[in-house]
Length: 279
Image (cartoon, rainbow, N blue to C red; front, side, top):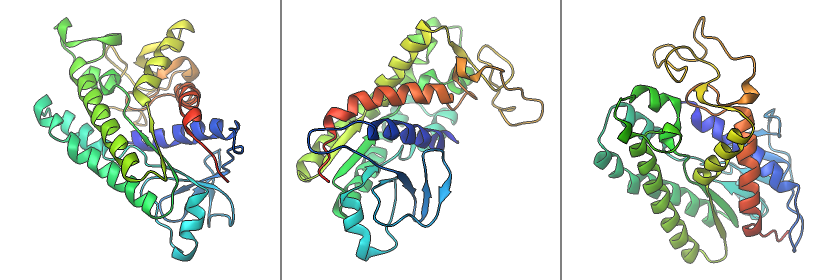
């Protein structure tokens, strides 16, 4: 799925907001996002390659410095974001109709993967690491469509599929415990949990107050949620709504740009007090 890339752009938006603030030590100011081994993007998503020298950067998940001599120094003044590690493991398993016990059995492996990446990032020199949780997966139109039922007991908040939100909460709880342990292991680094779950709930509150379309996807066709897993956004004759800025969901899998901006603003408010700059 493309959701991980969409969330990465949410990260860019969030950290752009963060960069406009200051803390007691010194203002935080990051100008670029470094993805993977070589690619760098500015705030508009434009590729810049190679990374500009001597500039603080966002370091995305699984980044590897290709010049080891400069790695530690650059990472010390960078903000590392670990990304949504292994989300597609859950997505694929859910669509394969795995049971909740089967899905929950995956959580320790997924959490461990994220923590291992964060630990490696810290040991490579990063001093500020952000690790996000997941939004309520059961609220996405794809799952509300595929698992639609007349059993009202299956639904909770905003007619979301309760069992998948339960899975998400379980993942996030185990992730937070693992982050706390990592922070104790690496006391010289700031390891911060990004609460995407509650940021999404905040988004829903804002959306309701402003009359946004919460239920249906903007780009899609068919059913209660304007989503068809066999005819998704981008296929021939699948329309996009004329007002995506009034929709929470863009294509049934990914949120809209306005949703990302609202969540980014909320995340900035939550993360900023924990983010201490020392450069």
